[in-house]
Amino acid sequence: MAVSSAAISALLLGGAIASGPARTLPAPRARRAGEPLRVLFVAGEASGDLYAARVLEALRAREPGLVATGLGGPRLRAAGLESLGDPTPLSIIGFTSVATRLPRLVRLYRRLIRELERRPPHVLVCVDLPDWNARLAREARRRGIATLGFVAPQVWAWRPGRVHALAGRVSKLVVLFPFEVAAWAAAGVPVACHGHPLVEVLEARRTPRAEAAARLGLDPTRPVLALAPGSRASELAHHAGPLLGAAARFQRELPGWQLALAVAPDASEPKLRAAAARAGLEVAWVRGAAFELFLAAEFGLVCSGTATLEAALAGLPMLIFYRGRALDAAIARRLLRVDRIGLPNLLLGGAVPVFPELHQGAVTAEALAAGALGCVRDPGRMQALRAACARIRELSPPRRTAAAVADEILDLASV
Image (tube, rainbow, N blue to C red; front, side, top):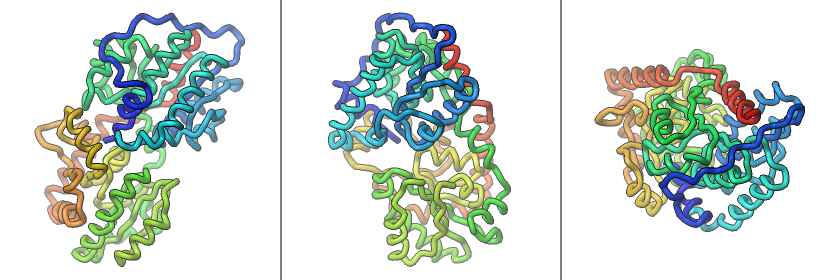
């Protein structure tokens, strides 16, 4: 599980944000009649970049004169964002990774504060990055700028005091799941749920299995094992070896299966290809189309993160795994309030995780292969995992999320 925001808060911003209620801040300034809408976006993760870009597109369709600035990735920039810097330093996993990026993080933060003062936006849109954005939201509210939080901190999983940290700092919080609403409302945070933006994105890409396989150059008549090592360089470094080793063991046992590996758009494919060649593997490389791969596959070995939700929405039985730095894992264990890491398992609840999980030292080639083989050779278990995927789809119905969030921004600008 990502813990970068806590690390940023502790090292960059001078310690964890206090858990008590924030002091009353000035009411946001309203947009004047005829004034072009100005919005400042802050999105540091790839998923946040995608979600925010769709919101920006929906906003621009209604406000052609919109001025959008901030931090975002390629999708936000393609949607017309005036970039204030490279958001890459914000995409950090672990407490121990922050120190090396500290100077860049300080510069980014100061640049955003200068933007709040030089060209005050009507609305600041903070996408995920809870501790970083909580401090930024406080600075915006001090300046009379309305703030929309999009994607709430997972207070139900760890550090519940963050509920109080946002009270009085955000003008509105948009959460992803209905069960999140009650805790935020009880703390006095104006909150709304418009569905998970990923569901809206993926529904438009849903196709039958055979069609998805053919589009990826896979044989629709042969089963596929999907390999999803993660998108960050640190995840690839920790996962590539065990995952490819597991794939080799799996294919020796079931030679009729195809292997396909999901490669993030900005991942270093040559290193992965070289590692696969050393393992003697024949692998289909799928870049930027993980959901299509999950639709085409029969089983997946999937790194914990957004990809697990994608896989569940695709109906893919899977084993969820994650391995990171030992020190980060030790710190996270002291903070977490849950006994599982996969988002589908967190959503489903229950006494034990439905989708099998492997963490840290348990993530070995032998254990990954054994877990996958144990599932695919057990028809009853495969059926139970497919039923769990169907339940995830019931819990996350498709909605017009981007348009609804755009409406929230327009409402805040007119307050």
